[in-house]
Image (tube, rainbow, N blue to C red; front, side):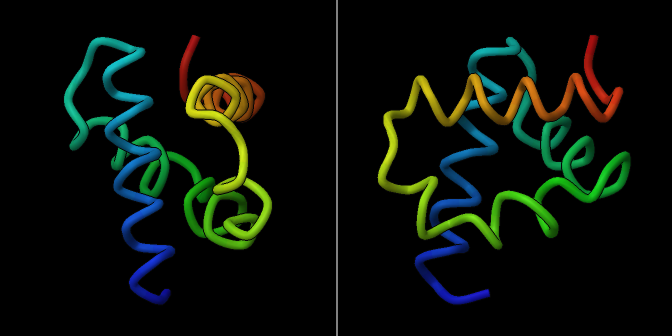
Length: 72
């Protein structure tokens, strides 16, 4: 993971946490320990995702989390 991907990952985690009303640590856990969304979706798709709006990115990640069963 390069610096841009790391920065984007933190942005995604904090943005999703804000939307869900929880701490970033919890979202990180959901994306890495309860699933592999960070490693298998967010980072590999950085080139496309980082060009989209914050709202779209957050909606997309939460939908993926729901699909994987890590959030209701």
